[in-house]
Image (cartoon, rainbow, N blue to C red; front, side, top):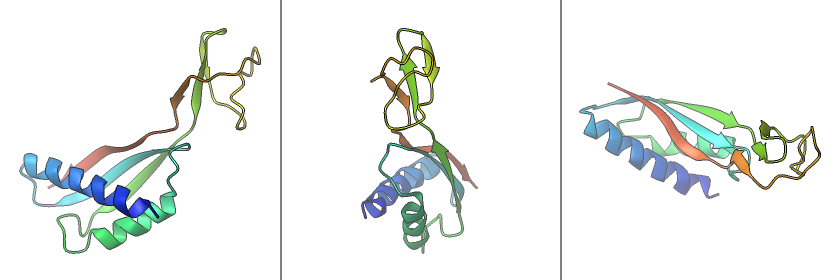
Length: 113
């Protein structure tokens, strides 16, 4: 369950950012989680609820944006979302290894007061 350490690191980043902006409380965190990140959103939400107790984020909400896999086809010069685990361009059938989105795990926004 590596989501606990991921959430701990994310909260530390959020606390630092909140303090840098003179905030005393975090109201909402938004995370972008890619389909390929290997993170289970429900486990991340569970870790969040445990780790915020007694912190400046104690009453904060967590919003998670799931980011789909997007690939780039060099032959067609266009982006596409693969339909399965073979990243084949739907137009020319060339397999792409150029993954543009879907592997991210990032703190997208923070609402503080």
